[in-house]
Length: 335
Ligand code: UT7
Picture 1 (cartoon, rainbow, N blue to C red):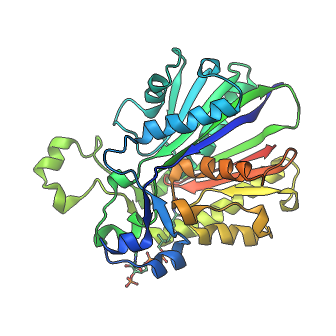
Picture 2 (tube, helix red, strand yellow; picture 1 turned 30 degrees about the horizontal axis):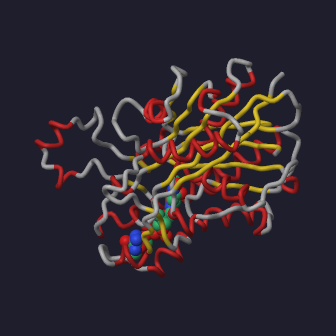
């Protein structure tokens, strides 16, 4: 029986820093509100003309992860690309990265599970590796949120939260038992699909219809979030799915060395930290610097935690996410 282990990690964020004060110049918001409600101080936004896109950022993060795994792009057997903000409606980001990195005709698979996208992608990679089908799987989470946010006061409840960036991991087959991905648990609840969603442009709102309806009035193509409802569900589901993962491995919260929660809101992470009685050193947060980068948030945080020596060999690392769908999931890893 094979296991899959993270052999390389990387991340990339655009250089352009957007502070809360910068946002308060273009909409009715302020640093105090944003920090008190979310913990965010600044985020990165792609600047027009800086050459960044969801795929290019994904490729930059992937390059670092592959190098750190001591592999070349020719060694990768499968690309899994998680995003809610692809460069194009179709095809997805996976094939774009494949082209940018001159990779062979390996399969490229796109995952559309929003904030849970990276955890879902890790789970898919793990299954392919465990069955023996693939040896090295490249998993990418990348988002260009700034290109599609309503940056007026009308959209402030959503637009101050999200940032751009990418993270990547290489999962590699291992023969050692009890290391790497110990388990993944995934869930979804489509009944709440509309509570955090972006309706168009899509087959529900084709372009001719948008033009005919005068898009300014209708705005189906800006994200919508029922913030308080999402928050209430998030804190419950985060805790449930972390417990589910721990129990499946006969572990308890006291076994956790590092929890990397999806960076949705610092208040959500703090709530979960309290529930599991974890110290500040046992939970990694960087939403203060990057905002919520959706599918990219866990791989960026995981890479930073690893780079700064906060994750060591033998550590029990827990990844957990909740977001649009609703979808949620956890991955339990022995480093
Ligand atoms: O990553 C996917 C999962 N996402 C989440 O888990 C996000 C979950 N939700 C949240 O994090 C929070 O609900 C938010 C941070 C989005 C919002 O915080 P809240 O405490 O739920 O605020 P609210 O939406 O209830 O709004 C409170 C007030 C409103 O004003 P009134 O009606 O009380 O006068 C809003 O209009 O704050 C106002 N407001 C703002 N004020 C200044 C909303 N956005 C802003 C803003 N700046 N950016």
